[in-house]
Image (cartoon, rainbow, N blue to C red; front, side, top):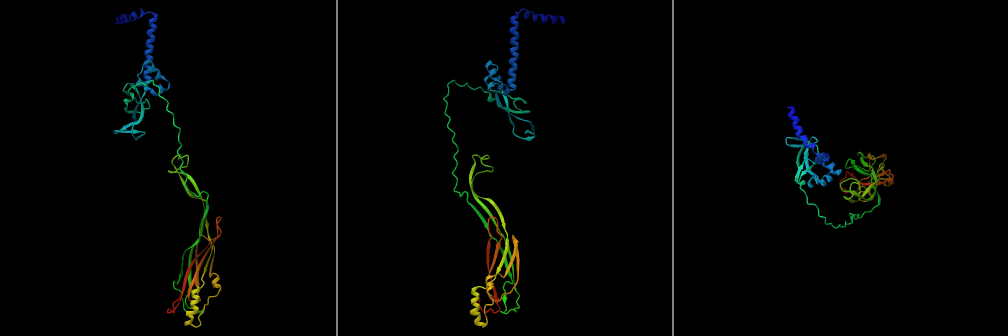
Length: 355
């Protein structure tokens, strides 16, 4: 058996021994070139992106090792990392397949492999039409088309806006509620020993407020964010009043209750009432016309006050005035608000009509 093997090898090597040395060198070079060519084609198919970057695709095309379709190089593919019940999964979540790259192995044939060209475990499809050779471009030069100058987006004109106007919004102190009891005070007579109970007043009031504004005109993003970084093109003009100082509370420091008899009631007492009661006259003194009947002092944004047992001396309508004075703020001087209330006081003699 060994002898037969040796005879066979002599039959193979004898012709090679008869080849001149120059021929052996050419044969070895040809074999080496074939191996290198096969390695080059394999590298281009397996790593098309890297081969294109280092110029191997262009060299292979020049030598005729790959077709024009292979040198155009890449074809579209799509992959999934896992498939569960027919559903594609990527990063552990249901998803559509993710794009990757295959290589053209022949005209109209796209080859895609897992782990190559960015493709994952399961290659779903390869787009072979990307590998159809294209006609080479003609050598006819294409005249250069002048590039039009870039036109800036026109800025819309700003609206009418009183920019820079500074003003102060003042809220005055005010009464929120006021009542007296009994609701229909009765004067039994004009004597000091009047047995009827006095009148009780209950008052609620709140302080004021001061806020300073400035009218501004700004460019604002339509969908939020800061102009111009977040919206260089999608913005609008905005004219509005911006708070520049405050708001400041303006507390109440004084509450006065004035209860002078009205001029009409004074005239009625001196005429119609005197016609029935000879000695009828206006008993309220002159100072009640000028000075308050009751005063509250303090400092508060919310005030509740009671003025109890007021005993009027005359029947008729009293031109009540509740005068509220505030402390003031850095934006305003003390404010005064006057709330008028007519307080009627009746006689038991209902046959007389009071004005």
